[in-house]
Picture (spheres, rainbow, N blue to C red):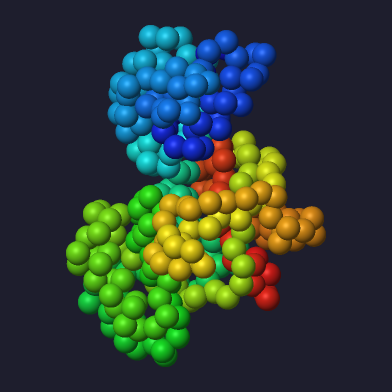
Length: 281
């Protein structure tokens, strides 16, 4: 079997490394790859956003399976393009990838499916967002760019002034471009974070070991959020009992809601959770 991995991060290095160990895999390519993937596979100089060239390469090399890492090409429809050409690809369709590509979409889906989540409002106009913040009590808020922002579009704000500044940076200064055309403003949950990944085929859910991702840029959990400064797994916070609760209250209803919307989720489902006194949200 010949496999193409799309992406260039640490995630793709791990995928290439493990796939290359499989006795069923003859060759692994990675586009565009990195220094790590070059050690275990063959890098291909094609940007992960260039779906047309990736498709051309996969056809030309008779690739048996393509595994897509980054969210952006999934949101842009790489799975739809490959499946339309009769190629085998692992990842969610363009419609299903909106679960990661739009926070408004995911929050509204969770609300409809009764998945526990922080209270929120979404805004397409900066003035409306400012008015909402000014009307609220002086409590912590979280302001998020709606679209993909490489893990950096989330501002945890201690009060009104920081929240107003976040709206200014996201919507007015356009720090994240079109990804910040809409913002989500939500209550700040108190608890400990946990990340859950699950393999899904649109119906069956196989959760992987829990992990804990640390996003702050500086020591002592200080500074702005990043795409991730480090992570470890398994996370002792997530006990077997808690994992069962997460599957039952978060993963199952989410996958069911996607299927009911004719957007069955096939691929790796990510749940970024806060473990609060009221349970996972």
